[in-house]
Length: 566
Image (cartoon, rainbow, N blue to C red):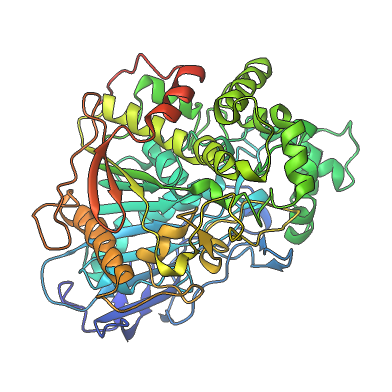
């Protein structure tokens, strides 16, 4: 097959032959869709809580017509969906003639407990029209993806290792689809963005991609790392009937046989009382592993960042303007009772998510945060904007801001910073928190209160909340999208897609001025803290939310004395 012109629908991979299916985008652009390609052996039986095993070769032709199932998870309503045999990926390849296409690999979000790479949320239409190949993937989630006994028997981070194996699959096979294995951009949002950052930190992923985009999170996000994985694993086992004095081996033997749905239902029982007070704590997420063959992460992300031990590649990172709207109004702080509890137990609720290993320091910083964001006022519904800013900063913006600062300081590659602030008609509610018409999220889930991507795209937002940017990159069937390219939404979408694909193709999101891209996006540096505001227009500005970021940088443990590792 001519890799420069994907006219034939049968592709020969190293593992076997796959058959794709011709499609057209919503604007009539031809491409070929390959859905549900297995990249690993099913992680079941003895492979549960183990690193993924590459898919063995198969005989015959695999008809890549149907997407693989999502990995086991609970939906917003608490229903169980998915199968353990879930390690599949999808490839969307243009049919146009030309040189090898640049490749973009998408890692979905969902707090490490929900989501999938399917086209319902992440349709390829807008990206493949720009002549790039898009790869999306599933990876193990929650307890099956991240349970750790802090031992070689169950080291954790299986979901990140799945992603790593998928990147290796891309490097090995993407040329057969007309893609350039040496020019891969990895990108993700929320937990997907934290994953992207983890791949920058893990030497096992170095060399598998040449550029990165991280939206709305970093590995420094408080919800993206568990500091007590063994304790949580044992607590889960005890809640499922294990005697409290049983060994770790006995706990693991039990957890290796329990049905996934039962573990998911009991997962919240694995949290300590302190962690359970947090506005959201994902129970089973990435953690530091013991040093062993095949380890993905053996050192705390903060320590790695301090040492400058991360992969130097061109990077785009940023946030949405009001990420914290995700939690207020109809979210976790929607009721008067929940807000009153937040007011009276502020330190206990916010403290666990402060990035400091000392509980005393966490509580002290939480007290200072109360004064900084609310003064001497009570936390009431009239203070929802203050609350939104606090939660934006704590969970999303400060972790991204710190990562941008550190990487820009140590890396020899350009780092570009952005804020997405476009408020389109389909953001539905146009008012700020605290106003009567501010009714946004519909998230009431006792199991898990941070359901990103899958839920965000279904929901109406005020301002630009968490996940709102995704519908300006992907076609989605679960959210309203205005496909008129002359509308404000259409123009913003074309801008976003142009910048993201320009970055994948040229390493520069604004390589030459165009009517849509009429502002040069300058890199961030210590001396010029540029960021691009992506609103109705593109505006280059500096020092994003300077006063708020200064508060956190002053009080959190310092990330200074950075060394450059090349």
